Figure 1 (cartoon, one colour):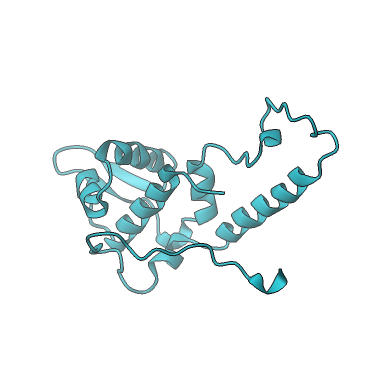
Figure 2 (cartoon, rainbow, N blue to C red):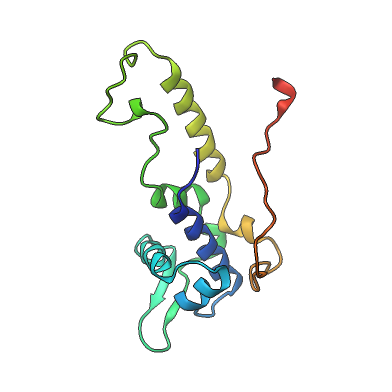
Length: 156
């Protein structure tokens, strides 16, 4: 499973806004800090405002900030709001045409895994991402540290 770029950017915007406290930040500022598309970021910010995670201020000196404390922004809820589709396999779609759907047990297992994924995110808030320091106040230029999946192989 892979989160969409939209969800990735939504989490980045929330972390960036959370690191700045009450200060209004702009889409341009955030796009420059993360070196991402301004146009795409506008869509992300608009959704986050509509969903109540950000507060937007229009006008020449406008911008956005968190609409509520970081500790009340649940990561599972953010992902549910930003991910368009949790259909991991064809049979999760209403237009399912899989020939083995009637007797296949895979969907039950994948649904259990998907629920575990989202339930784990439900245990965390934006405050957990920010930690005690303002790590996102000055993003470093260039690519970040790559981290891949971290699986417990002792059960294999």
